[in-house]
Amino acid sequence: MNKGVIGILKFALAREIDGMNFYREKVKSVKDQSVKDVFEQLSEMENGHVNYISQLIERVSKGESISKVEQPKQNVKFFNEREKEEMVGSKIDDTASDLSVLRMAYLIEKDFMDFYKDSSEKIDDTKAKEILKSLSSWEKEHRDMLYTLYKQRSSEYWNEMGFTPLF
Image (cartoon, rainbow, N blue to C red; front, side):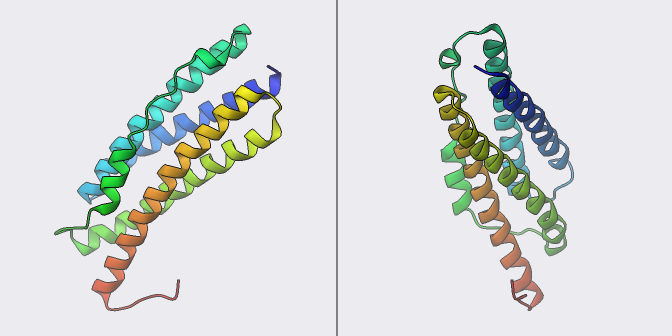
């Protein structure tokens, strides 16, 4: 594998650490319990990504095959269940403050997804390309779930306020 793959993986590792730390920090400030639960789960998943990418970097650095590194499991069931939940009994002011954090989380996951997708298109190594596409797919699941949660909370907030913005 070439230095380009190592560079991509090291950049990815730094971003995954940032994402993990973001969720760990924001879980302390969000008010909605379902948002807290999502952020706790995302923090765990990002930690899994950190460990996985660290193992990939170690293997690539040693010139070993990365096909032997086991991919972390993604808890898709958690996200499917989360999408079906409705907000129950949460305060409208809490929802307003959580909306900006949800939007930031969505953008983080979108950036991760785009980075992995774009990187997979720029390298020749078949196995690395496959791994980056998998990572992009995982981040897409995170992004989509966060977007759904953000849209739900936005809709509930604006309905409660008796106003619907044009967006």
